Amino acid sequence: METHLEIYSTKFLLERYPKTTDKNLRAWSNAELLVLDYISEKHTEKIHLYNDRFGVLNCVLNDKKLTTVWTYASQQKAIQQNLQLNDLSTKVDYKTPLDDLEKVDLALVKIPKSIELFELFLQQIHAASHENTEVICGFMTKYFSSSFLKIAEQYFEEVEQSKAWKKARLLILKSPKKSISKKDFINTIQWKDKVLQQYYGVFSSGSIDIGTQFFLENLKIKSDELKVLDVASGNGIIAHEIAEHNPEIEISLVDDFNLAIESSKINLKGKKAQFVCNDTLDSFKENSFDLVVSNPPFHFEYENNIEVALHLFKGVEKCLKPNGRFLLVANSHLNYSTHLSQLFKVVEVIQQNKKFQIIECIKKR
Image (cartoon, rainbow, N blue to C red):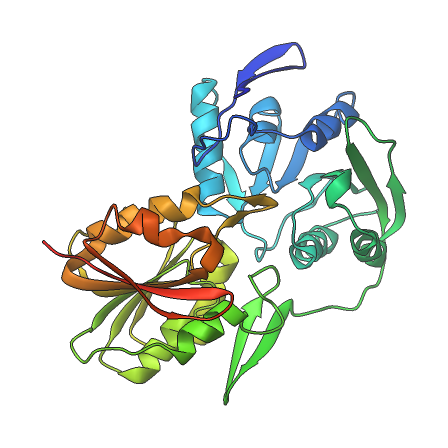
């Protein structure tokens, strides 16, 4: 796995967090290198960074006055890890996509997979822009679509594409439009007789995804399951349905994505719930939950990767009380039962259809 990068006459050690066994993956892309090459002769001191997933921009530009707009708890950990590995200051000015920013002179964006999240980034930048604001967006050409161009053109008068370099390109945005129609950047989703809300960029923006629907249609809560954990909780729909089942249930929600957590706070208002933005379950005590539920992720941006889910499963086993249950829904082809059988003595597929399985695990100690 490639971990050493030489740029601006300086060598950097950059590692991925979470760790991966895939030796073809590294902590930076050619899109980020193209961004850094483009700004190499600029003298702008204040720079806003977006989607710096593993911290390459924070490390290379550490001598600048940086503001990092973060979206994932694992992203913050990756940035801190790589700053430490390179003996750089770990003091980072973090903002979320929902915060108000001070004046933006130059913004660097690695275009995310979600078009909605890209628009949320541009809206935030535009709100703090001035006539000379410039936004440099890097992307790998195989992941780009004209939809990103259309979004950019809503906020900026000048939208240019660079030439390709090693399968990467830039979108260069200048001259912010003086007047644009404002949006709430919240999607409204109908679920049976309920209305849920979630911020742009949160998984399955138009409706409850079919895997979660299958899970909810077959979910049965036992009367003694009063402490519940929802892992990779998304907009909180599973936790919401469980809380509706019994008002005495205390439910904890954990998700890596900060906008998912903020969405679930809206949807579980008034419930006995706590919300944790984290990519691990380390903040929860061992043997503390009667029931854990999950529709775990198996995508990491454009990568299909079950390593994150497998790490979460280990945390679930620690958090469950003896004889506690772990219920999850997953695509059948992922074969999670094989991995779960290494952690739990009882693993059973209790419902399935052509695409999904609901798996029940019992912790026996």
